[in-house]
Amino acid sequence: MLATSLGHAGILIETRFGSIVCDPWFEPAFFGSWFVFPRNDQLADGLLDRIEHADYLYVSHLHSDHLDEVWLADHISRDITVLIPGFPTHELERRLRGLGFTKIIRTMDGEEIDLGGLRVAIHVETSITDGPGGDSALVVSDGETRLVNQNDCRTADLDALRAHGPVDLHWLQYSGAIWYPMVYDEPPERMRELVDAKVESQSRRALKYVDVIDARAVVPSAGPPCFLDPALFHLNRITGDELSIFPDQPSFIDLLDKAGRTGILAIPGTQIEISPAGCTVRHPLPDSEVDAIFAAKADYLAAYQRDWMPWLLRHKAGWHVPTSDLLQTLKAWWEPLLAMAPTLRAAVGANCLMRFGELAIVIDFPAGEVREFRGDEHDFRFQIQRELVETVVADRAVDWSNALFLSCRFTAWRAGAFNEYLYNFFKSLSVERMRRAESEARRKLDPPDAHQEIELGGFIMERACPHRQADLSVFGEIEGDVLICTLHGWRFDLNTGQCLTASDRCLRVRRADGAPTARS
Image (cartoon, rainbow, N blue to C red; front, side, top):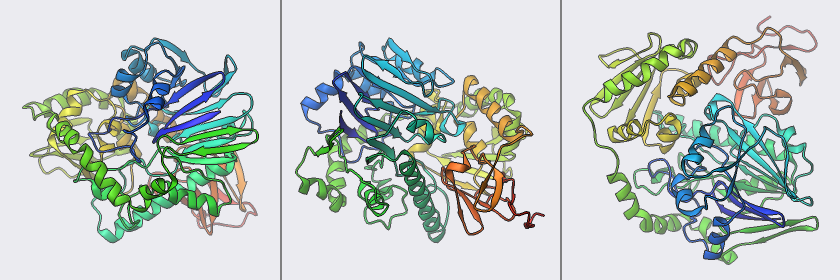
């Protein structure tokens, strides 16, 4: 089996039974904020031809750094067979059919299928925090070797990925892929704490995946992006001192080495050939030039930026101009959705102020209203350039996390702890999505009476993490008096069950020996 990096989460998997192109991303994403790092706009023509004539296309989920609709429309034959994850909604399939792809195989979650000797299984993660469409991971086998392409799928069932057999090559995300905490209004000292905690959390989570999958070799992928717009250039992690959650590939390979694991550095065009006998790595550049990408990263990014500035200027000039009826448009769009979601609204429980240049509006979640801001008290605040909002409104974007927030082109403030239901609202701006968001809120806030329990480190606790129901027998780690769910880094006080990450979660926990806790 030959796996060639296409940059970010992109992989071309070639076997004697056929080839799969996974998540090919080439066009800058999220309002021109994210660029592929290292750059993949200089791939050899021969590799591009192999990509364009692959037998199968796999797109893991709807985010624009995985579903590159512009590039797919221009480069991939409509005769290709598309492997669709078994998501609970058909949104991804509709998007791909809209591009003209008609040969669709809709898979079932975790079920292996035989494509004439090429065996594949797609595992889905359907938590609302990944968007109602969900995320997915791909397992590929040619009968001799096996590859797990986890990209940035935060699956809670790692045993399922291992159930197909021993893994030879594991591709996974290790770097940040979110706007938090960099866009928040915090003093530098506090921001330093938040950034370091986020990097530690995502590294811990990735290493947990590595341990459970137990592959012969690991390829850090699906990030980091780089930021070439001068307004965002500070988000690049170059010296390591930047207030950024985007460490690059060598930093994670160092962590793998310390953990006794084999890490492989892949840049766009790197070929990794795996066989029962071993693994061979071939870079498209001399090793000295590969090393220079990371050793002289500032110079590399500056050259990359110069090449793309004309495109970036044209792109920004195309953002939608302000309209006269933005408030009325949002009111007509959002108030019916708010009416569908009383449980979600109650879970947000406060007003959200949104400033779009001179226009300021309030989303009154308790009342289910959208109105002009007139000094209303609020617990959440966003400040976003008017043209960006006008663009996503004109596009009728149903997931503002993907369409807007991942651009990092905004600032935010909140009075208290993170509230996932607020962001679930912005991810669910359609009837189809809001129906599922409300159902998820009801399930979390009104759970069944019976819960399976586990014993961990001298404590008996509910098996499912109160955050996203991750299996704590897999992801739970105890440090002193604190339980850490390593799936997302959420922390719980074992003496009280109190969540130390957010205010709206509590862990049912007691000592296994019956000794009293602080809650007893």
